[in-house]
Length: 175
Image (cartoon, rainbow, N blue to C red; front, side, top):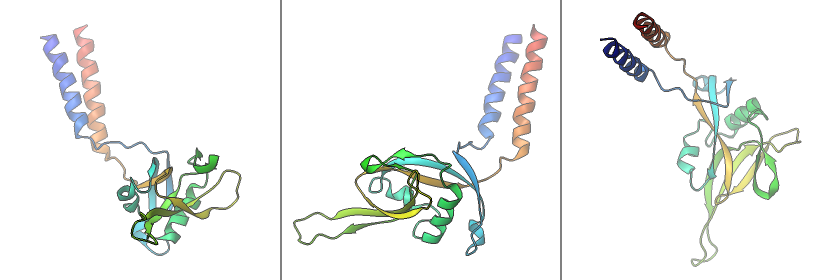
């Protein structure tokens, strides 16, 4: 009987834990104020991804600052060097890029392939200002990615805590 209760409590704990919203780890959470659009104002979780602007263009294009240079600069300024520095092209240590757009430089002749390029805000280690940079689209870089910060609803957290306490108390009775 006690084995059945123990298994039941473990199953119940996992079931209730699955009801919780997934928790996404972020490197930092920043508070943004956008004077041009109040829906952008608030807390944002910032993480980083690596890849070329050609390979991860869809993810980059989903960012709130995509094709909005002013907003990208606001985010870059808010993070400054808090995201750390990664080795980038030409042995430079750069903060993650806040990608703005990507395009192809058309070939001068039909036999020459187009050259993918991107532009982004970034900060070089040791500099005291962020700069707009042009990036070759086939080279891997570290890019910032933002998600609007949402609080985990408290009732679900309390259910998980209650279930854990219940499992512990049932286990103590068994001993």
